[in-house]
Amino acid sequence: MSTNIYPQRRQMLFDTLPVGSLVVVPSGSEQVRNRDTGYSFRAQSDFYYLTGFDEPDSVLILCKTADEQQCRICLRPKNPERETWDGLRLGIDAAPSHLQVDSAHDIGELDKLLADWLANKAYLWLSFEQSSDWTTRLLPIIGQLKRRIRQGVEAPKGIHDLDGLLHEQRLIKDSVAQLGLTQAAQVTVAGHVAAMKATAVGRYEYQVQAALEFECRTQGAARQAFDSIVAGGKNACILHYHENNSLLRDGDLLLIDAGAEIDGYAGDCTHTFPINGKFNKAQAALYDLVLAAQQAAFAVIRPDIPYNLPHQEAVKTLSQGLLDLGLLQGDLNSIIEQESYKPFYMHQTGHWLGCDVHDVGAYKQQGNWRPLQTGMALTVEPGLYIAPDNTTVAEQWRGIGIRIEDSVLVTPTGYTCLTAGLPRKRSEIEAWMQKA
Ligand SMILES: [Mn+2]
Image (cartoon, rainbow, N blue to C red; front, side, top):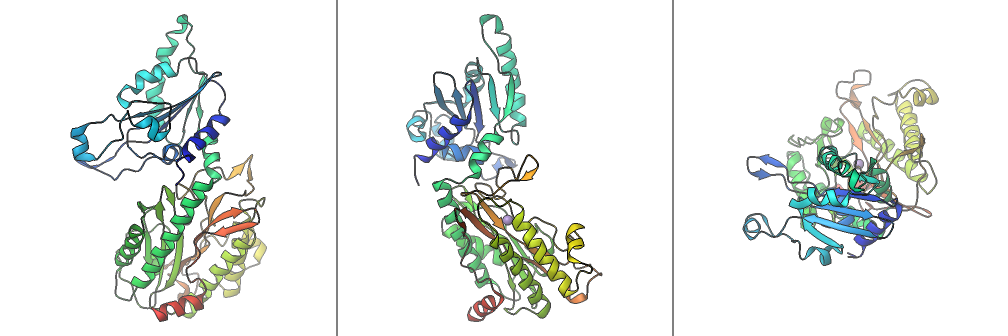
């Protein structure tokens, strides 16, 4: 991985900041799980994106004045005793060269340092999504500065949302981000293949989950990018199901939505296949329809189309198919207009993908769906979910949940599918399961 990417990313952010700016980007702190045991730590994505550093209790500070720009890191000092218990720390002396920043400071001094660094800065930038405790911490420091006004010190005039700048930057994937997403996607696909191999009637969902996550971790994933959804039969109708504790039954489908995290980038892929290797008639009809909807969405993806167009194409295909199969009645346009497909398809057809599985970046600009651009990464994930208690449809359809999801990168001429490699056509899946 290029070690120069982090200074480059910080420079890009500097270039968008007005003179007189101070930016605060925290890594976050460890969270207690119970008593003296913590949840495993993962640095906030904004911080990791700008530093490649993942120690808790670290804060990146960017200062821009008319004369200079300064990049500073505040972090935990070396502490041999704590390091014996909790792991090595980079430490203050090694940080400037290791992280390519101008200076490094003890995190314990942060409030005092901020009082100096904030003096005569007009703009204080914070993530509004993550900053509630930081605003309460920073307001007294700004108050102190205002009391030094007779000494000629100026305090910030406002706190500004960093998300608008930094998240727009994160939305367009640079070469290192593209590589991270590509590797995360490849490991994710390997995990799905391992899950298919581990699937059999009479096993439990968590056993398939274990096979998938074993493969991802074996191939270098730091963790899963989100809790794996391994949903047999009607459990697939719960969109974010992750109890993963049911028995896999003969005649049911298995829906798996999972992704590995590699170098801070998320994989995201969903696969639906029959537990016994053979689709029944109702499952086959709905599966083919969801796959057709995904292909209709793929067909329009290229730069300059509105973000929502793939969703509209998927909805059109799904609605027409539901009409043809008799699950919906009426005419296509009014079904789409009145959203009467929503009992069967209640989510969007995708989301941004990046450091976070539901990645940052606006979807609309001035009230309109933004155009896709080269370098954006998103998922394409139509589905159909027929609630087990939906008595408005024939019994054969009830309790079937299907989603097919791939991750794509927008290219100048269209897109690249990052998660290619799984059998997707019904015949391919059945042949694959037969062979396995
Ligand atoms: Mn997704």
